[in-house]
Length: 79
Image 1 (cartoon, rainbow, N blue to C red):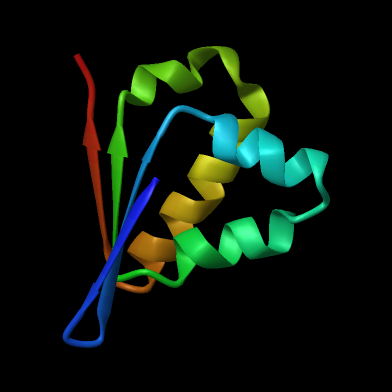
Image 2: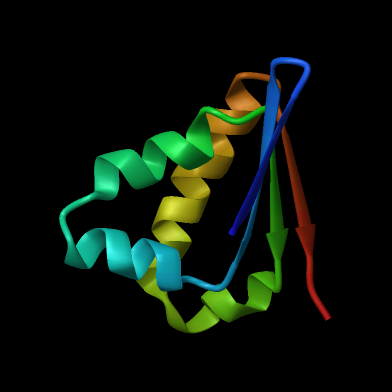
């Protein structure tokens, strides 16, 4: 993933589910959630990649709800 911080804002971009899988494997789920849920905007590429990853789907929905509930943006793209 990529991260940018400008003018006190943060946006995060992610593709696929490997980051979440690695966080789960190494017991770093809290840090994973924080890095995605504390940003001003989340950019998600290839959302269809989550089709075969139920755990990542669940995390994405919780993260989506947290961001949108706080008035932040989620941008999703797919082919």
